[in-house]
Image (cartoon, rainbow, N blue to C red; front, side, top):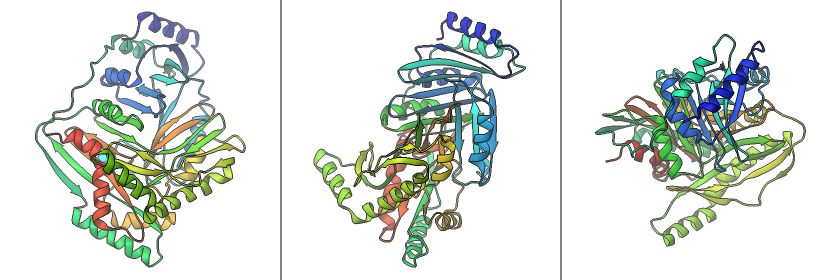
Length: 439
């Protein structure tokens, strides 16, 4: 899969760097990062993948360096540790974080911290029209311990559509309890305790056969090419998804975010689809909900950027099962900033939490009834210059052997209807549910 001459050049570069602490080497390759991960994940305890809709992607194997932080200052603490590495280009650190600042608490999220970052031992990085195989070797590790498994990699064929046998489904909370929570949220909004809150639900899928998370991600990427694909494996657990929503991208001083809020199903035919789209664009409820999210993102980015460009109104972002109101926001940093400073300012946006932020988060803790973990958190990458890109972790699931937890939520505002919001969550659950529970 990887030419022997490429491995030999990497070995020579690593030998030349002996005595310099963490050693790095990079060689150009013609390789698909997800294919690299699928081929090598079995050789390493950790594996990572991230891609954006522009075709840029990273696939990483193993752990050369890792840090985890927790609490209200988790992003600042993580930034300080990453900056201390002085990562050379094209080395990237993969970063994932939970919705809650103090991190996941349930057993199923045991391997995932409040904010984790990893520099992979080996990664394929694709961007700017180039692809490189990057090796990061920590002190004390012999190069052949990494290069040996890389020499042994063989290309995996495209995975078959999963057939996991019989399965059972469990809704957490129950559908009845979730409808009740929506009603409670509407009452709280009517009492002016909130303006918006996002309530989520989880579906547990138990199957006869355990799926491979990165094989599932291969299918998700093919079906949802306009999304951010991501996968993060620790041991036997894989968190994966295909998110439509960019939290923030900061590269070369250019900053962008893409708030989404307000949703409608896709139609069965062109005429119905167009009618649903027009109804969404005209909906006072959805436009009001969307404006809450956009205004919050703009106000939180404002102190960091000049020349912030915000369209006068939303456009449509269409996925296979659902379409969203979308407002891309662009600006230029007023002075150099690490992307994790922007993440800290933005997360959680009202697209996944609510507004006011503190009251919405408190309401979620009180009524939602399950541990979100990394769902509605974020996942992405940073480099040595402080640039990076993060997607909000949506349309996602946690795979634990033959059991999967998948997640979806809906934004609740003053005139939300529990049945309509339930339908929205079902549409958002479909990408993974259709893979896991195919009959």
